[in-house]
Length: 343
Image (cartoon, rainbow, N blue to C red; front, side, top):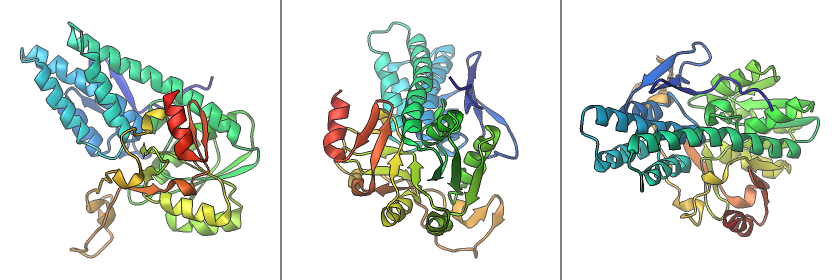
């Protein structure tokens, strides 16, 4: 068992505190939330981010809303459902958000104490995140060979999951097993999660990391001898098409060109049983300001048009396999995904 690094949220005395990931690594500031609206803005504005953890945070958000409404004498099931719809609208691409909120609503069925039912479910999801991220990290670590040179993108560690992580969790566990690793992290434009968060987490854990800009990936693969690409996943269709942070598709194409194994690392909750292919995945487009500015500094002429999708979709044919908490799903992905979900 590895000690959990810094966590992205704390639930204390009926309030939820979120580590403001927009300010890392320069500052560690905790944002207090006491309603579903507070949590909605925190998710939408990326105070907290990462597919698994926003689901758990939303579950706590429903409890906070029920608590607030009960204090005001206005608690009804309809108001909880309205709060759930608000939370679901915060980030449309990550399937874990809908999965977590639906679980919370289901927990109300047959319960006489809605507040207690929502709180128990949120706590259950938090505990489950720690358990499955440990399992997925152990499985991923076994796939990582000694002396691996690994390229990754975005942030898939404790900050993104509320546990040990997915792709980064596998790296953390492999390192603690004594394997020699070289980690190359793409900075992940435009929000710089790789530079601000992944590099920070790895440095906190004393795991050596080399930061590259996203446009350096092909040259890095060739000149540094990258032999493994590990990424996260926000939503996976039944055929294996995988939505992840923008830039992932480019890495998959490059990995295919260089013959490098390419693995998304994600829990079974990231598989969308209602989508047959990636063509059906809704891709969130975000504020142009994220591209036009770095912090408060403009980097493009005023009035410049921006296309800012937050995610792209990697087709299953470019994926070597998908690492889950129940084991590796290998090719042919569609057949093996359906079998894994039945189990």
